[in-house]
Image 1 (cartoon, rainbow, N blue to C red):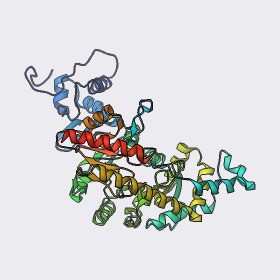
Image 2: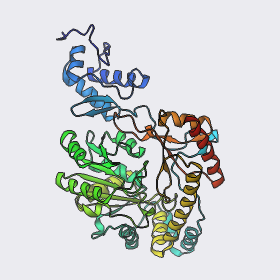
Image 3: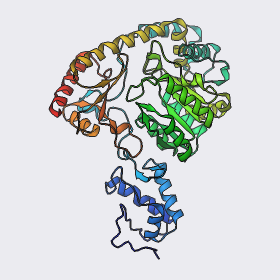
Image 4: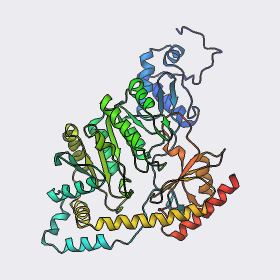
Length: 462
C-alpha cells in the first residue's frame, strides 16, 4: 500500500497502470511514451521523483527506474543532477534536417546545402580516370586502399594543423554522419552520456537516440562551454565524452576561441574524456585556429568530411583517431559501411594531390560571400550571426517569437527555415532563433526573393 495519501497531492503525472501480463516497467514506459506523444506531458515538464511515483503506484522504485531508462534511451527524458527528470524540450521535434515537403515548392532556406557551382575540376579528373586501363577496378564492390589515399587525407589534415604521425590511425568513412554512427557503435554503449552544446547538429541527436546515448547539454559562458560546467558534467552526470564543432558551429556559426579549445583539451586529459571533434566546416577557414585534436591527440577523434566544403557527391570522411581506439573503430566502420567507394576515394585523392581542391574551396568561399552580403543587406537591422564564408546564418528573432513559431509562419509564406527547437538538447527552452541556409537556393535571385519574404515577416513581428 502507498505510504502517503495522494488524493489531493499535486503531481505532474499520475499514470494508471493497466492490468497486464507484461512486466510493470514495460507497461509504465509505454504509458509515459504515450502521454508524451499525445501532449498530456509537455516538453520541459518535471516528472515526479522516482520514489514518489513508485509510492503512488505501489510498485518498486527499481520498476520506475527501468521505465525511465527506456524512455531516456529513446531521447524522451533529460535528467539533471540535483534537479530531477524532465520531458526533453525537443521530444516531438523531427531530427530529419531535409526538405520535408518538396512538392510544396517552398524556397529552401532550411537544409544546409552548398551552392551549386561549376565542376570543371572534378569532371576533368573523372574523365582522365575513365580513360585509364585500371578504371574498371573503380566500379568493383571492394576497394584497394592505396598509400596516396592516406597521403591526400594527411595533406588536408595538415592544412588544418593536424600532424599525421602514424597512418594506422587514419581511417575512411562514407561521410561524416556515417563516421559518427561508427564511433557511437564501436566506442560507446547504450546508456553512456555524451556532453554537447545546448544547441547541436540534429544528426548527432538522431544518432545518439539510435544507439541509446544520452546527450548532456554543457552550460555555456560567453557563447561556449565553460570549464566549471564541463567539470560538473564529468562529476555529476558521468559523461564519457564530448562532441564539439569548434569551427562554424552548427547552428550558431560560433568559432570556438583558442582559450576554450585549450580548456577542453586539458579537461579531456585530466578526466580521460573521449572527444569527438567535427571538422565538417573547418576547410572554409582561410586561417583556422588549432584543432582541439592537436592539443589532446590521445583523447580526440577528428572528423573531416568533404560533402559540404568540396562537393556534395563526395560522401567521404577522414578520421584521425588515437591508436587505442583505431581497431574498434575500424571494425565498426567496416560493419556499417561494408566498403568504401573506390571511385569517390580516388576522385577526392586526385583533387587534393593535384591542388584542384583549393580552387573548389576558393569558389565555395566566393559564392558564400556573395550570398552572405545579400543577406546582410536585405536583413540589415536584424542580428545575423556567422562569417562571410558560412553556408548558413543564425538569425536572432524578435522578442516574443519562438523558433518553432517562426518556422511555421515562414512555411505559410512559402519558405523553409529551421527554428532553434530543432537543435535544442535537454529541458531548457532554446533561444528564439532560426537557421537560414543562404547557400541552399538554386539561384541568388531565388535567395533574394526568400530574404525579402523573411524581412517582411520580421518587420511584422517587430
